Image 1: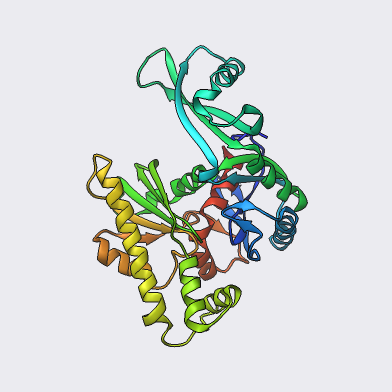
Image 2: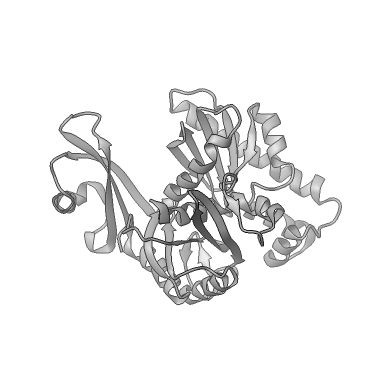
Length: 351
């Protein structure tokens, strides 16, 4: 199993996260992308820890149930390993090499790029384009991940009745989905910050003209809000999550628990942006897009726009797609920001 593996005619996108599995099924109809179905299934605590799968069979059962519920077509799937589990490097190589020679050369020089024995990793490469330093060379993106990270996901999909045709990198899938919506942002911003707020981790991506040029991860996410709800109201993690989803919390929840979390989130975004500005030629951003499970929290986008002083919007990679009649548009708008990776994976069908 390689990382930018062979293309298949039709693929289901399956994103395995810490707290849920997400599935997206996209077709192309008359040249336009069409969201045929999608679904999210919550995972019990401890099944996936820091995006490493602890119980492969349990994840597989969840995937199987989700595929049935979504009436997914076929059994070929694309999934991804997360950024922290992947080493990527851009290297310059001789233009005249073919893929076999290029791979042999990479394996020969692998110890320069990869801090693990070659037997323990899955690696792949992709030619990006001309070298910036030599006209006779090309830039090559090298990606490597520990084999256990790849194998866990392949096994989970197999348990779920799916065949892994593509193993992608999560950030690449998110960038692919972002490319669908970037032209719909008002005033066609040149420099956009995409802030992906996950369960335990928030990742800042900076995109210039639609392409990611920077990323930075930090340990902060929706789990902090869940913990605050648990502590305030004496609930278990599961009860806190359900109460939050179903808006079944006491009246003091918004002022005493949610507002401090929103303020903390904006503070984290501000810090990440300042860190980026200090290490780049830029000192401002044109637009901020919020993604991830916690981005759709009521009031977050509005307060972030007020504090950051730039337009802020919620990610929706399906904005220019046609939507199947059975899909609830309001629910999709709520779910869309957390489906960026799954959407980007489903798009591998159309490479």
